[in-house]
Length: 191
Image 1 (cartoon, one colour):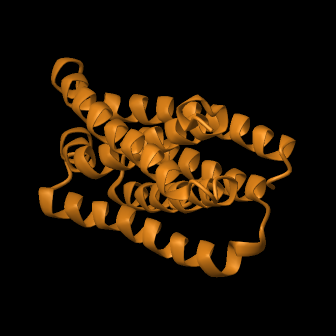
Image 2 (cartoon, rainbow, N blue to C red):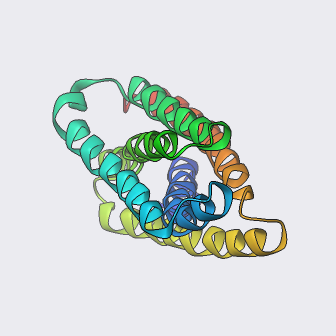
């Protein structure tokens, strides 16, 4: 079986491309966004960013225990809703408290990406799991580097406020990819 031609695996790989790059741009550009757009002091901006990491950590603990038995489609609805709400908070309400809530929600929403998608890979490609994991992780890391680099160019040329624009675009792409992945998994009776 040629994994590079496997449509499901490639869809998952490009979902993780977006997931990894989304996490990277939030991690690397949020403090600049908060200091430039909201005039938040650098120390407070770093504190706000730590809530993004806390959101990821807490939600991954919840996903591994409480939400383990929830259907993947419901998990994704919850996750994408939290990401959308977090982005709306960051984009529209210009206060430090709201940016804290937005970053926490972003982290919590993004928490499902790697564990759930890598679970799909392990479940669907048991015999070739090492190769399948390697393929999706290489593509994810490439996304991390490429989109993060492009975000630097966008911030320099067009302004850091476009961090939110890029994040909304990534969310839209991730929703489309996730929908296609869930349809394919349902078709082959893997969920």
